[in-house]
Length: 325
Image 1: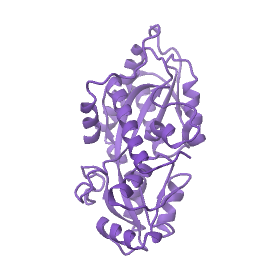
Image 2: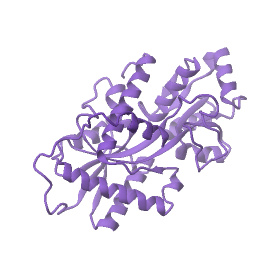
Image 3: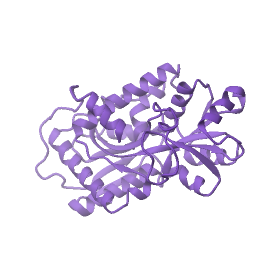
Image 4: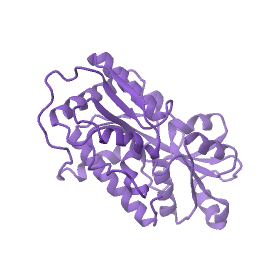
């Protein structure tokens, strides 16, 4: 998407954070199944995308990926499993952008997501959508901002997880509109969006795939999608850029990491597998149905991307006086 390519261009001269080759890949890799750790519960967007990629690589390469859901610690339980694994390519992490901000939003994060993992491949991205409860009469971003400034106690955001793209987008929304609406952190997307649908919380920003069914059912109203480009899933919803908030260019994104110090030839092989699998899934229409845009970057470009993403979010959180929790 536009932001990713802008970031990559901006940092084109920067060094990468790829780990050095520490002995080379085994010539017979893989000789057994590969563990793909997914640090969230089964059935969510991260898990669905991970399993699609695992199955597609399996059919393309005759390689078995075993998806393991290791939940807890805001995603860090599964992350630690991979961080501590041997850098032999047989244990990888598949997670969303929340992995990249763990150290920014958690008081006692057990690792640095940027330096303590090997970036392998950015798999895909998707815009977010800003929804509002039907119990609210406002229908536009302009009306929401005006109402929230007039009666600030009546307004707040629900968010699915600390450090989730929707959480960061809500912080940015406050910052760029001059609001100070509280952000209520839930344990997952479902309870958060259900409270918005029930009118208990006025609004929410989250991945379009998760919230669009509520919009289509008439349970909530969509007022804008993040970013500069309308979503193919809901082209009738205007973008934040169109509505005068170009700073609200936020995506959900998903990627694969490995343990630290993975050999570069292993990283390159896995990167190619992911890119080929994602390209095939996109050609089959499997990603469009999820609202995901495929990514096909090198591991080096992904390494630059995560540094820029982390730095951007660090500046955003600092400007908002956010304290890790």
